[in-house]
Image 1 (cartoon, rainbow, N blue to C red):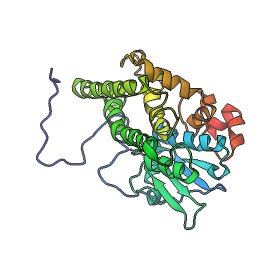
Image 2 (tube, protein in one colour):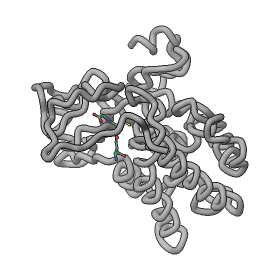
Image 3 (tube, rainbow, N blue to C red):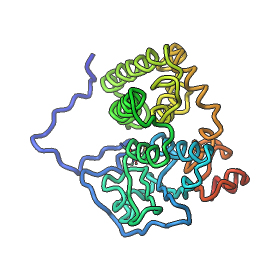
Image 4 (cartoon, helix red, strand yellow):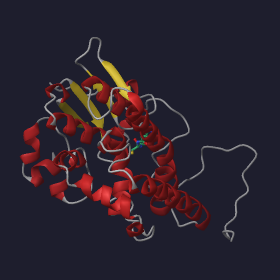
Length: 289
Ligand SMILES: N[C@@H](CCC(=O)N[C@@H](CS)C(=O)NCC(=O)O)C(=O)O
């Protein structure tokens, strides 16, 4: 069925089009900084500039897991980059990530400090740096990378496709919602079949593949991402549900999920994290930072 409000693209698209929706006034058709703003720097070896979205959560969950495993070198400062306030277009952030998207990491424990951007690259960098959550070699390593890159390649259809049209577009449109719902359900089925015979995505071991996928697909079926669990009949993906619930129980996941989070219950939000003790601060204090 066609939408009644049909559209004929002009010969040349002009950027003065009023997009509307949640992101219409934030995104632009060009890259680069819009304003000068230096990034703050804390005392820890790893400086993270991020927001508590699923892509940001991947990194804070891995950092909390590394700390829980005893890697003191994974101590980090998590600075808030508020993407609704256009912080991602500040000059300091663009120097770290020319793509103006959170998360971005600066490793100041090496000389010269090294920037890492793209959440998948950050997970891989940290897993290799600390020798954790990624097998060193063999088929298990290959399988972990298969699923890590599956997540990076597939999720833009979930976020930029399904989530955008289901939640953020200025009005509901049947065609894109149907198209991306079909794709997201297919992806959930891919995961469900894999998790039917495996405890974790890459086999028996919890890895960066799970840490990459859980904030998106776990959040989707648990109802914290887009509030679309009923719409997608998430309960039917029983193996994804089992995996999502099990990972949610991990204390490091619970901590990492709160970092740089701006929405939700105050007790689930820690605006910035500069010390392990920040998690023990009163919710009001941490929520307003
Ligand atoms: N492929 C990137 C995607 C990052 C991304 O899309 N970040 C979003 C938040 S989840 C963002 O910064 N959006 C701001 C914008 O689009 O201006 C990654 O995985 O790091």
